[in-house]
Each structure stands twice: as structure tokens, then as C-alpha cells.
Image (cartoon, rainbow, N blue to C red):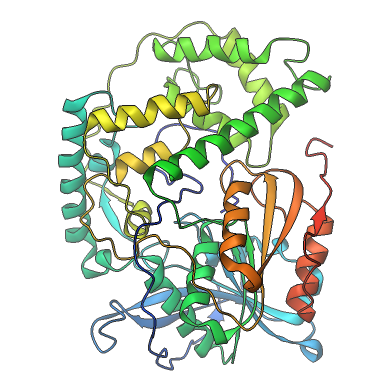
Length: 489
């Protein structure tokens, strides 16, 4: 999930990478083998040089003979047929990103060497994209608060989330209760079998790393090679989930400030960046700040924080500095009226996946407000990591969730390769090191000393190490590191 959008106009879009708690049990220990099915490939409508297809899988893997739906897939065949090793399956992030789009329009993400030796395959995970997406009323999605203000709004959020879940179930059907990542991991094994691969070669990005890790737990002896870039740590309780996200976000802001202090190309060079930012925050609290990309559209403190965090994905430090200068010079905007969205059109709801993968219980507003105060201390410049919206949007989710958090139990025949970025704004380096400890001898951490969400397309050092591992199964040395690359060069 390396997608970056500069505009932060509010929508209940999934927060880049949000992960959480470690109090649930492990996934089912003995997953049944995936029934053999086939994929009929044909030229994709968007680009006939790629192939698209579907694979029929069960709605509920515990009842494989029950109702089914079609997963959407895309493939680009190996460019060197005589050198072909097999298929490389890419796990998209989000949740909600499209693997089909990645293969059809974004295949340049993969090196020429990988494309020569592997068919590049990906898919839209269940409940997203073209794979029977979870759909819900736009009006109910828009009613979810960015940040809960008091106990009355807390109670209203619980009631609204219950209405939303019921609406999604009505519009989507039974699949809405089976979009967790454990179910997606079983889909992934069905894909492996349909491709005719004895063992899986996999590269997961951001939330796609959770898919890979849970596949490795369920099917350890079917893994040939697995790269996990910007790793999600699925072992945190509510508090540690929020705290690790806050520390990660603040670290990226600190790096931006440090860059502005030394780089003349920063539009705020020579100024007190934190003081300028604090003045914008005060204006946002008064309802007087507007979106630099959408004139007249107000920015709340949450959306101001989100604007910065999204800029850190690249990172786009020069763009963020320009945005801050633009917002500073804009005249105060009038206080905006509350949104009155009443439409009944439907929209995708990728958070349905997240809320089945995480249990983030909060008893009442008092506990919620306590979390916010602590986050403001940990991230004084940003205050609202993107995880805050995840917390509120999953309030009231029935427990136990389908795929509760737990410490990893991976026993693969080959070590998994983690690609962690020192200053990742979403999947923090603290997550990468913790997952590495959980994997023990079954994993190895490759550290990129730079910035941004993801490293394979940023660092040639990382891409060489990843390619060598995927192509020839050569694992980097323990403690391997790649130097930072100037993101503004």
C-alpha cells in the first residue's frame, strides 16, 4: 500500500497501515488443503498485454462446499520464457488496495530481472476491488467521526457503527462476515495451487505483509521465498498499537523538521517550523484553516495531521513545506457547517477487513480521551496518528473478531525476508524489529536507513538484496543494512 495522495479531503479511507493487539489466539493450526481450481486467463480490458482472470473460492473456508464468489486476478507472463522460475505473487496493501491494478498499470514496480524470471501475479483480496467488494451506504460512512469529542458522540458512534455493519451486510451479503486476512491467506493458497506452483514465492507490501505472515503460519512448508516490505505487527493491544503508531508518526515529523533546518530548498528554511505548524494547528482548531489543494475546503486538526503523514509516505518533504507555507498565507476561512451527506449510493468499505483482523476495545469516552491525551504527549506535533480513526471506526465490533491479534508462530523451512525502513511513517521500524524477534531464526531483517513507506523502489541496495533472495533464495547476512538515499535528490 504505497499509494500516496496529496489531497486530504475527508473520506473514510483506510489509514495506511494500522495494526494492533496481541491478546487473541493463534490461527487455526491445521488448515485444510485448498481445493484445486483453475483460472481462465484472457487479455485485460485496460491493457491487453496483461492477462486477467477469476478464481472461484468459498465465501466461508470452514464450509468449502457452500456459497462461492470470484477473486479477480491479473498476470504478466515472464519475459524470458526459457529462464522462467515460476510465479511471483504480490500481496497488495491497504486493506483495500488493488493487486490487479498493480499488475496491469504498475508493473514497473518489479525489476527487469524479476519480470524475466517470474510471471508477476496479483489479485484484489476478498471484499475489495473487483473481488466482491464490501459496499455500504455513503451517508453512513460519512457520518463516522474523525475524532470523538465527548461521551454523547462516543455513544452515537457505537450506534452508528452498528447501523453501518447492518447496512453493509444487507448490501454485500454473507461475504461481509468473512473478509478477514486468515480467509484471504486461504485464498492465497488456492491461487498458488491454481497457478500450479508447488511452493509460494511472495512479495507483500504494507498490509499485504500480514497476508504473507498468516500464510506462513498456516502453510509453513509451502513457502519457497517471502519478502515482507513495511511489515505490519499484529501483536499489539489497543494501547501499544496506538502508541507505536504515534511514535512512528512523530519520528517522521522530526525528520522533516531536521531536513528543513539544513536544506535551502525547504520553503520554510531558516524558520521555526514547529512554531509555524503550531499556528496552523490553532487555526484548524478554530475552523479557520483550508486545504491547500482544495480552496475553501476546511481542514480539521485530524486532517491537518493526516496531510503531513501522507506526505511522509514518499516522503515529499518539499511538497509538505510548500503546503505549510500556502496554508500559512491563506486568509482564515469561515467555520464550515457540519456535513449533511444524505445520499444512499454505495461505497467500498475496506475497513471491514481491518475490523475483522483487530480487536480495539474502548469502554467509554473517558478511556478514549485518555488515549488521546497520551498520544498528544508521544506525538506533540501530530497528536492524531492515523490509527485514531481506526479506533473509532471499529468501535462496537462484535467479539471475538474473526482474526484476533497474536504473537507469530511461524515455522517455515526458509527464512522470511523483512525489509524495514528506519523512518517509515506507517509501518514503523518498531514493528519490523518486533516481528523480527517473533520470527527468530525463521526470519531476517534487512534495514533501510532512510525514509518513506517502503524501500524496494527507493533503494537500489534493497532491491538488489530482495531480487537475489527471490531469484536465487540467497538470504542477506544477519544485521544487513542499506544506506539512506536522499528523497529530494
